[in-house]
Image 1 (tube, rainbow, N blue to C red):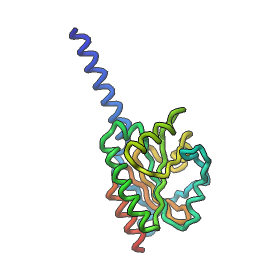
Image 2: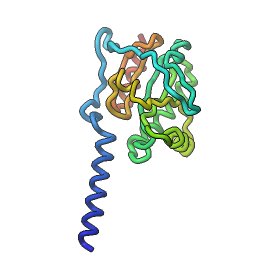
Image 3: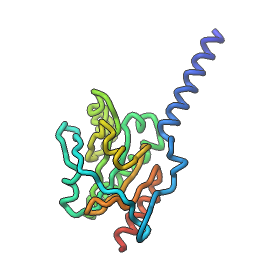
Image 4: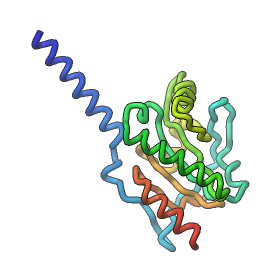
Length: 188
């Protein structure tokens, strides 16, 4: 009986460590935003000319979002992680609240990029969003192509692009920093 309890404890601890690693790899080491180059608000990265599938399975070119002349906020996330990580879920809840504010201002477009994989990923994401009452625009980076091109190494991550697709700001798990960056962008 003691061996069984010990095994259960070991499995539980292992799962906890895996969850922690999945949600925090590079997060705490990179908790400060990456803001480079001139005016303290530019990186050398551009939004790539890629198409990603939405929840309906339709290919949507990222360049489509640049047509409206809005600032683009790319939110990289995972339903699996958010469902098992309270800080990640809280982050998405706060992102949902910000999205409503941004829609009223009509100057910022939020695009969430799901990093979920597998045949059931779209259904899992849809079910998760429905359960939470969130109405995000979701695109799927199923082949990690966007993550590789923009060097996104962890979720949650935020990137902000201007109306030309220039990446102005990167942040890993720090809502305050990207809100400050948005304020800086709009006060210029």
